[in-house]
Length: 330
Image (tube, rainbow, N blue to C red; front, side, top):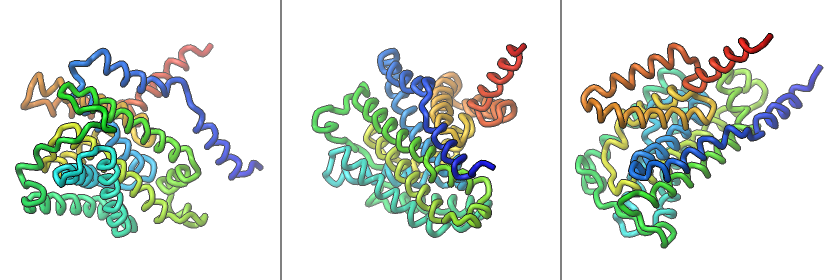
């Protein structure tokens, strides 16, 4: 009989191997800069939302933590980065790390409080924390600006060399470099024994607990990592737009990132890239075509993907590839 531990190690090694197709999204992002230079603002928005969706994939897709309040960490990162600049420290990289640390601390506190819960209770409490923080930001106008938000969040030149120009050249490469670095971190987590343990917890937490896996500690750790990543995405958003408004803590932010993950496919990392990219592009052109009914188009696309593509757009691609492969067999 095969050794189960050896099978797990072999599975981890097989998953860790790079495939040539994994380079395609990154080639596409670099090409976007040169081909669609006039749309760098949209491209920057895509990169930020990909990072945000990637952080949710670690929590929901890999660990199976049901949450409707993941936007809390994005919003905290955005406000922290904005307040650091307003307070007189405009250097963006150090501000990014501080904002990610603030979001990570919030994730640690809420994770310790909530991650012994499951199902609808966990969903509702994560949403309650998000709504609570939204109201705090709304009422604490002396700090957050309330409805008016934080304005004139002007970051200093990146690394002291690159100005955040109006056309968006610097902010695009800034967001892309951060996304690539954190994607490598996410991929390393996904293919590690820790990542495999998270998948086991997602499938059957009771069995993993019986095997001696510290389930709650694993969940808190990945929750903190994902919270820091979401906070980093919020910080880049603040640096890129020069503004932080209440919408970064709105329920719509958490709902939208959930739609992006479902659209692309959860538990696969690249689903975050596909889902966020398709959603932002679809939203951009649909709202340009009809500013009042663009959600109908996005909703119809989501219904079609969920109905015919189990596992999102990547799942639909897998099914089509398998169908063509069966037809080609003699």
